[in-house]
Amino acid sequence: MTLAILITIFLLLFFLVIGMPVAFALGSAGAIGLLLVNGFDLVSGILQTTPYSSAASFVLTAVPMFILMAEFATVGGMTNDIFVAAYRWLGSIRGGLAIATVVACAVMAAVSGSSTASAAAMAKIAIPEMRKYRYSDVLSAGVVCVAGTLAIMIPPSIILILYGIMTETPIAQLLIAGVVPGVITALGYIISIYFWVRSRPEIAPVIEPFSVRERLDSLKRVWPMLLLIVSVLLAIYSGVVTPTEAGAFGSFIAFLIAVIMYSMRFGGLKEALSRTAVTTGMIFTIIIGAMIFGYFLTYTRVTQNLISFVGSLGFDRWVILTIIILIYILLGMFMDQLAILFLTVPLTFPLAVSLGFDPIWFGIIITKTAEIGLVTPPVGMNVYVAASTARVPIEVAFRGTGRLLLVEFVVLLLLVLFPSLATWLPGVMGF
Image (tube, rainbow, N blue to C red; front, side, top):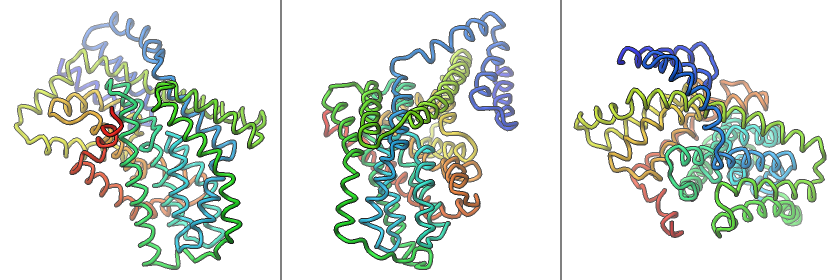
């Protein structure tokens, strides 16, 4: 069996290296591994039942619904209005456009849940505006790439929802736990930008301030997005809808706002549905492939044996946690975050729980490492998406993420040293 495990892991790595889509790499390697250890009948049964049993879950309906809500907000123009308002209030400060981008990304994160979608949308809106006022591409691209990652920490977060489903951890608690780390991260970006532009004034020229009337007028277009955010949060935490149902509720509210307030036509509806279908198809295919590979891990007892092995080493649990975090950061440099989640959580979650770590806090730690991976070379997905959308050289975009990436590591360290940053708010809210 040991030989079968080694062959399967080698095949998985080989498939990933040659560029096979992650979902098919996981599924193919898992199926071959099961074939090696128990023959054709087991593999045949799993391949027949897994696609349906993995995807036909009521809880998973939250994923496409939250994606659809974000798409309606983007296509309808709500995200653009948020940026305009932040720009008019903060633009006259040195680096104000970059700070406004962080604020807009944080607000958009409250309806998105998808980091790459947030980065792509803000790249279309913010980078051309910053170029118009002679902001450096290094600054503008870096801010968009890194601030876009807020969408996977600030609720609703697709990563946290999937983590909750996989580990049977209460999703409402996970979503609430992401609020404080998300806000701290956003504030860290703003502070970093403030000192960055002070040390290099040429990368962010000062803009003439807008009049009080122009600033107040911009707020008139902000309330639809705030209405959407407040409606969804109140619906969840008042108990009117469950976190699973909240995505559908939010999508309906976002659709009504886009049609009534922004006159969204059939073309916009078609675009939002098309993007949602593509993103959902990708995520669900990864889920199915990961489940097949998970069956292999379960059948060969890889998870249990790993826990026993680590326990026998006698290392302090904080040393083991540090190793896990370093592994996640390393994997994030080369792999998609969803793939990492489905590939590693069946191994690391039981290990973390067996060492006495809080499952809510551990989910936030994993999400923070995912944020780092999204902007870390060589495969920083947010960087590639934002750079291609705004036509910025990839090396310039990666240079821009350097200073802001330091913020991520500082916040990660704070979360490790002070777990209450993640667990305090769920406790205060009575979870």
